[in-house]
Image (cartoon, rainbow, N blue to C red; front, side, top):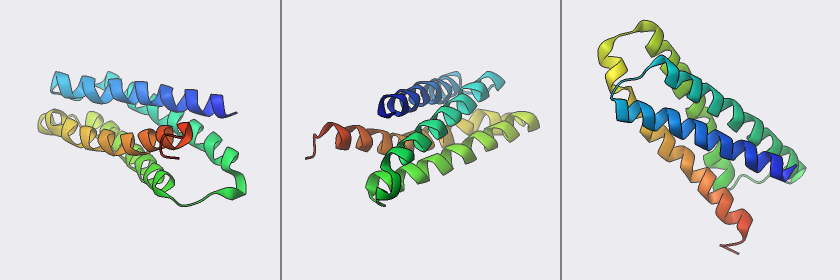
Length: 124
């Protein structure tokens, strides 16, 4: 169960990273970036759900859990906003969207890295 959770969250990282940085490097949000945002969000949700089942009733609101929840909410808001932005098609919004994307990606990296560090015993 842990391996499945780690794999799905890592797949989320890869997909979301491709979407965010492809958008940033192209200088314009494109419809295909949405596929990576949505896929990353779905895999992150699945992995997070698995991790919470592993934690069971022993869930503690710590740095990892708090930043993970914030990151998941921001990731969902980001993905929905990206979808709306593409549908509206306003050029300025399409060209400036990546600033928000990079900020959300950086925030998302905090729980990913803290989870990796805490679960490998590097801080123990």
